[in-house]
Image 1 (cartoon, helix red, strand yellow):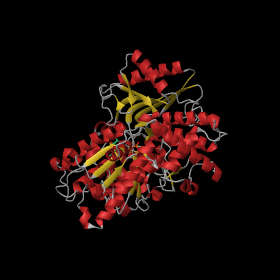
Image 2 (spheres, protein in one colour):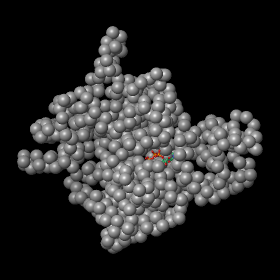
Image 3 (cartoon, helix red, strand yellow):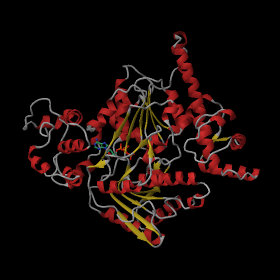
Image 4 (cartoon, protein in one colour):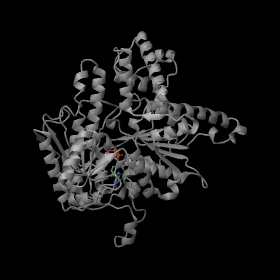
Length: 593
Ligand SMILES: Nc1ncnc2c1ncn2[C@@H]1O[C@H](COP(=O)(O)OP(=O)(O)OP(=O)(O)O)[C@@H](O)[C@H]1O
């Protein structure tokens, strides 16, 4: 059976000797790829028939193979035979364009499937979710009827630099003609565009920090101490705006999943009045929050969807212009774990419920914002259409093992009232062990960081940078620490740039070292990465200790976010990961690596 599945015959005696998972993992590092894929899929619990269908059949040569016909061999999906770890790593490292041609059969199937409604792909970091989303966009673009104009496919993600990156990669994969059919925009810009298309009001938007400051100022003025600014901001955004509750009566009836602290009817009355006052306060200053923009956009699109539904049952009005049609035919979402309920309402209203309407990829273990959602209750029904990717193409097994330890003891949702885990998550790449380096002071630590970066830069390795990100990066918990590291590296003669909200400066050289706070590392990848100041007091943030007793639910939530931030940071590293700290180590880190 193994031979029929494509396992290389000379390996059979060695395969018979494998009795543990560790042995298997070592073995698959140095065998032909098809043999490795077959063994891993069987180990995953797939049946022989399934392995034949999803692993072997897609790469099987239809005709008998002429082993001297090299031209034909080049045209076939390749099965590189590697003699050692280095060679395998070199293949994966140097040909990052490989994914453009050789999707894993599992990835290919998910990208090209026909789904009878919204579909969701989960999977640990580096399993190719973004790659699958890009192939999905191409697949749907190819399937559009000839002569289609405009941009009927939406590809959206959480932040601006990731949207820019998706655009670059889709162009490489799909070419300008197909890319022209795809709208690529981050979710908040999309919401802002919908609102500015419809409204004349030109309010400016404020971020979360400014919002909390406003709440604090208002509570101080009112002498109100029953609720904290943070509690009210979260209640407003997650419950009132999140569920688009339009009246006090709706709020009285609302479920408040995940909000912890119980609220009596009287409490709710107070909270409602405070949020009304707050909304007015912002309006008077001619500002609003991103959450309000998303909510307004959702309202506008829901009204448009209603017009579209009415128009489709009345063919006379169907001709009456773009405002009576759904905005998109297909919606694809990357980083789905971080979208808010209002975002989902907006997206749901932008596409008619139909075959292949929505395709979502994301990993709830990487959620670093507050948005816990239940997609079913927001009209996005993914039940029966959820699939998981388990093979990491980015991270070595050694890094992956450490990353999984960081999540120990926490549980995660599946975006839909159920739970999710990373069972089966694995990597075929093997490399050095991650390092954990203690220091007494931040100054000492910076010296280590600079020395490590210079050692890496001095390596004679081929200089390829990763496709999304760069070669070397230093990731820190706060902007002040980032400024320190930038100054130290620059003083030591290293070209270093900060990762801003649009990513690293475009003018930076290919070998520039990227420095940024952990939030900026979402979706990026680096060959060598340092996570610095992984100390108690930074990860999790020190102020959490103060709310542990007074607001235990918020404490748990914030701590979980910080844990995910560290997980996201650790899984950006491809070949090498060094974690440094001063004082006491973060409690999320294992005591020994
Ligand atoms: N089939 C493949 N063959 C080779 N490389 C691949 C393949 N699929 C993905 N990759 C590579 O693996 C890396 C991770 O892929 P991608 O960014 O899509 O993962 P992801 O699941 O979205 O990760 P994250 O959740 O951490 O953002 C990328 O460098 C990508 O090019």
